Image (cartoon, rainbow, N blue to C red; front, side, top):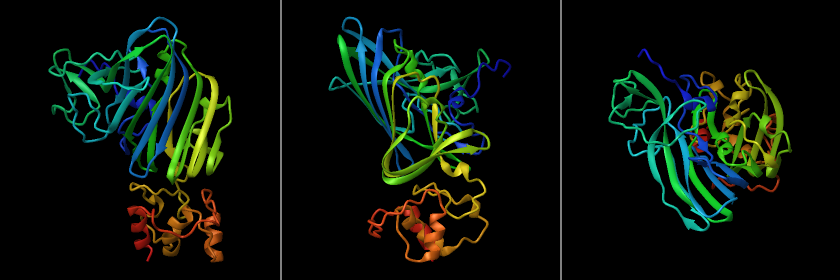
Length: 371
């Protein structure tokens, strides 16, 4: 292929994975497909991190139409998977996005899908690709590749799955409620990754979000993650519920914000927010590469692995008690209490009754391994 037009465009917005992980898909902002004089007056973005491998996104927009009533074509871009075996869907529906809905001014909107070109640092035009000429680069039609190849022009392009719809804006303030679920990525030392594209919001008229709230939730579970918070220096983060946070230095990514939540929400709010970069929420196991202590990083999800102890014999007593510690159990045994108190994420809760009702299948597996 002499004319290598572009490479892994979509993955630039996420932490580089190489071949040691799987990138499924990114979350994204809604964006106007053509120029418009509509601005984002307010946005509340909520991302709920689940134990089933999916993140649930709920976005409430308040859009200001500064002109007369009109219909605007709005799009949503989702990158193709990488290092994954999912086949390309010619219909344009992403294999790892579920329950995609758009409600505008209390009316449910219908949407269309397409496979579109994704060129690094260029706005997506949402023009459907002609899949009769563009084929996947590994020589197998519609197999799991993130690039497409045109033999006639000897060209390669990246592609995305597009969702787009006609949005009828009336004069003044309009509301859009947008929801979907998407598969969290993962890799070695990363139990999960949640990439979310913020930059497309800059395509609206005001090139900012006048009033922006970010909410990262661990609803009915516990999550331990980190991210680069350099975009969010204009206001402090707050935690609603049981949780803690701190700044830590990481070998490759510099200073990160480390967060531990238990049935809680991390909240950030600011005015005149300029989303000039994207963000990636990553499981905090990347901070504990040596795993000198069993359970330094802990997650209830099915993909969780104690990487540092795969070739060692773990302390079985500690192993089978980790699910209890993660829920805040105050151990009567002084040795266990001392051990779990040395783990940063441990948050004792004297009120918690030792119920196993919400233990996950992965946790029951751990308990059985610790017998």
